[in-house]
Length: 336
Image (cartoon, rainbow, N blue to C red; front, side, top):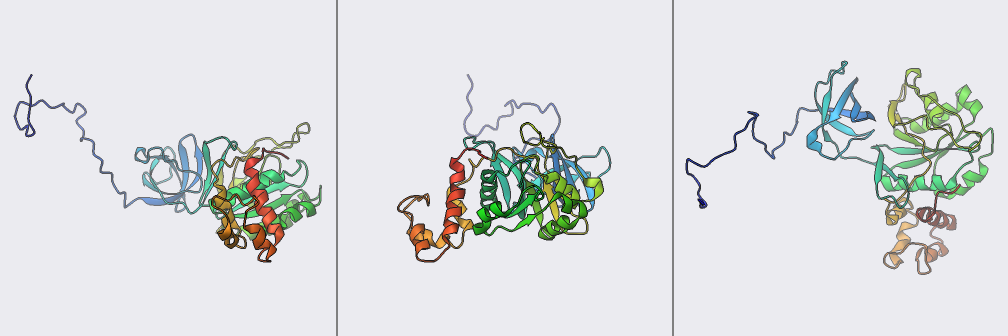
């Protein structure tokens, strides 16, 4: 058996022919400095609709991105056919760093993380005051996900003609979350739409809520007629709504620099991905008091320094109660 040394420069060494006649593979990838900037508006079975300047461009993810996926709200770089004409396809070659991320898991024990929206400024948590009944535990979970992902929360209470909002607002008053209360009559007259629009102007806002709360109805009232989506009704037997929105979609607000992102209705909002230690960052009046806490403090145990911090008058006791209620949501099942 013939052996070769370190310097195999003999002419008779066999090399595998390149049957395809193309260039050999290389680890050097193009930088795509001339790529156009765009924003992902929808994702549908591997095809992404992107806004490039004033054109809607259909695109697909480039192979070089590997498993990294683009989601609604992402800022991306595209190459290829950017004309936006029918039957054309561009390639997404780069996903820009995200300023915020809204994530959830199916359940608290589900390790599979679902990224819902990227680069949103705020999260509008839409809940009905009746038909279906409000679910404070789901609201708490959405608040935790907002704080963890870098989004400012906004509470939108619908159907105030069926029930008063006072009890629910009292529950979240200590958190200082901005809110808007709407009724069906006000939506039809446009009065409620203007109040909501004031909170959205100049921002990218993701709307989330369980089915039947009027989330898509509200979004339809905010956007132009040609961009409206279908809506459903609440099941009279189960008290739950039907899923009429099946995918997230970014829609521009007419006459405004703002965007709304309508997401599918959720019936659970798992927080497996959330590190409880990060929730305290949403409570700047309580965070300094954690310096005296024992290591790995859960902030709900006898030695927690926050109790003394509040007793000394540095923060409102209702704020500590709210923090502990939010931290406890990860340990609870999805209740009412």
